Length: 193
Image (cartoon, one colour):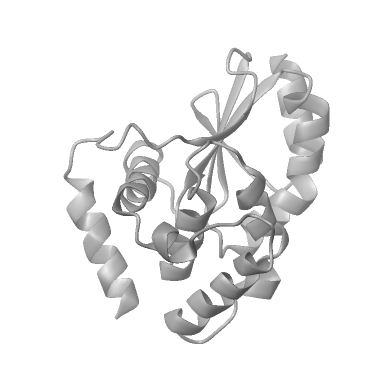
């Protein structure tokens, strides 16, 4: 039933004009004027996305983002309602900071469990309450503007880039295959600098 609701929401938002909620800040890192722009479409309940944050992102940060070579934007492509709700938490402060996003991916195995959306939400709330983020979780989960922003990201991924799985990396407007292979990605990025 939850998948039907998410699918219905996506269909409705598919036909709405883009950028309805431009006041919601995207989650980004790096030099906005960098030569290399990366967009990562990901779902917070996706194991491969967590692997990307664990195995690929640290090298990207150290070798490219912190050196000003890359500007990266983390876009939402929730695969289920639990990922949708976790994305709302990641965007809750609306400051563009990636700290909560990384926290959720780093600890995915702790909160992303349960056989119902109610169990998953309970685990997510419990895990966030243990952190030092001081968020009003209910307010985050009920924020319609953030929800619209997340759905707009997903629609953009599906319409513009024909995304079918996560994570998907878009580097300077083009899809990059095998985003969880850091050696291949690093070699590719070095050629763009």
